[in-house]
Image (cartoon, rainbow, N blue to C red; front, side):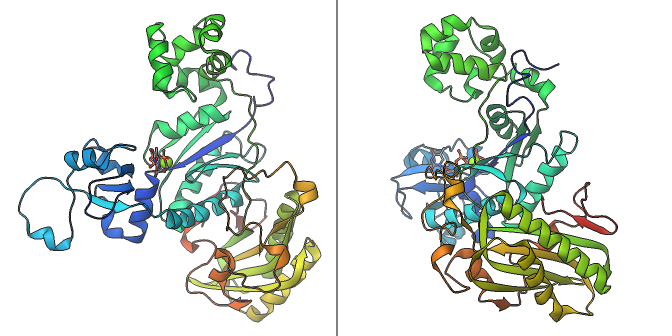
Length: 446
Ligand code: TTP
Ligand code: MG
């Protein structure tokens, strides 16, 4: 049974994911210094090495166990969890638990965030980036409730393997419930709340968990005897509106699992790619050509669906066991031309004629967007930092234009030891649904 007032609303049948990275700044610090994995890590804003000023931006879950939390003064965090000064201090013999303190390095975290967002844009056409470590995806029509847990699990695994930072994901029929769900089992959480389960999922939660209810409002609600989402859902709407204005109406609805907002895309993909793996490696040139044609068409279709133009077309050819080769060609200007993608892909693949392959990929990058058709779609809203590679392609003429993506790939034709646009180990056999017949599995969506 659907929630009252829910069925028939535009959002009634949506499948919405909320992705929120776990202790994001601390996870980034761990990515570049793996000795921090499993350790209490505190990242301080306005903190300098060895000093006591500044505030906690975030803390790893190990540090949170000592009472360290976001927005706390560093001095207070240091009381709860003293600092490991440096390696030379290791000779100290006290048994007191200690933490690793790091200074915020926003530029680095932003670059990690971009890697995560690129994956999100690959797996969904409808992505709303809302902060450095958070985004909503609408995958309605592409992933059903019966398989969305697999989809989300694969997405988590892919982010972890390709970027090296952990994410929690909540899935629900609307944005506010998805957000609560992503937070419900952190870290490394995956909570799927199917439409029929929304009301029951929300019911026991404290009102503070409802999106838009801060500590002050929560206190006020409690003073009215409203402690849980169930209390809020059954409270008299008129009194809530009396007390809190339009917000009262909004959180009354949220507590009932009703949220009619649609996931409006914000932020743009830097590249679009599709990959497919053969269940058994093959040297059959017809099959390889077929698969590449399918992938090329698919990528071109996805670009067309987003009104994206591309200036660079590339392939990935994985020879067994893990020999990853990428080739790409930059055109003189941005295009949207499926035939061209297919023919460039076939051309690039000629070099590998007769080779045994086990996985193939096609990618278009150096994207630009037709503003006439995109206006209103991408309002930027600060979600994508300036200087990212999303708005660059129309004016440049060369292959490597200094963006993360293209500089990672070098100029037009390069071979890589490591897969530049997706971890080779991440995707094999992950999905249950395959738009390709026979022995090929498409898993571009995760
Ligand atoms: P959050 O997603 O709120 O926190 P988090 O990712 O650190 O931890 P969680 O596992 O609970 O999601 O915020 C994302 C980043 O934003 C966080 O890593 C650091 C930064 N941030 C601040 O700088 N100050 C703050 O007060 C908060 C809450 C976050
Ligand atoms: Mg987070």
